Image 1 (spheres, rainbow, N blue to C red):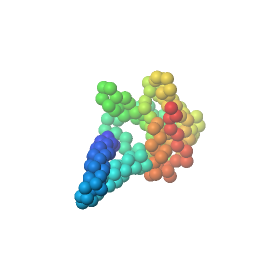
Image 2: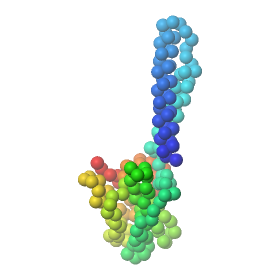
Image 3: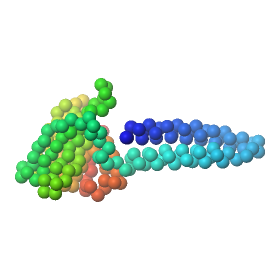
Image 4: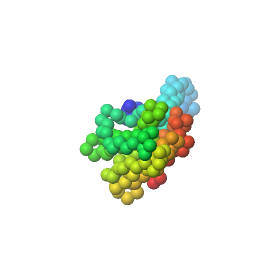
Amino acid sequence: MTPLLHILDFLALVITMILLIAFIVKWIAHLTKQKAFPRKTLFSTLIGLALFSGIFVYLDYFFTFDRIDRSAMQIGPEVPSPEGRYTAHAYYEPYGGAAGGVNVWIEIENHASSTVKTVYYADANPRISLTWVDEQTLAIENAGGPAASDRNATLNVDTEIYHDTGLACQSLLMKNDYEQCYRHEK
């Protein structure tokens, strides 16, 4: 769904820019030749601007991990915590066909409350391993790729999350799901 929204957002931007140029030309004609004010063009431009802005805000500030494409998901390692309260599950999401890549996400299953939550999402590197430091702290090694591509994180699974691009960190819908959010610093 997200690629479709990105395409729709781009088309809204292009159409809005064309309408804006048409409005400016008609407005100049209105000022110089005493033609009627181009209300329809102005109205269409404002609708296009509102549509573009609305989709842009939605994509950036209303992110949830539900957008992960689970249809092509591949199951990765599963690691129980030392006392068995949690189980960390890794999953892989291929994208982009032959020239694409793979994303990895880590879900934590809380056996006491029977809940599952995503705590980590990033581009996958060749070496991915999960190690419990203690009952609530999970060390995620996501390394082995090109320089500066390591996406390692040590997270308290109750209060912290990691999102590679930071969309989860700025999401208004996810603010109550964590106390600390980390992103990859380039």
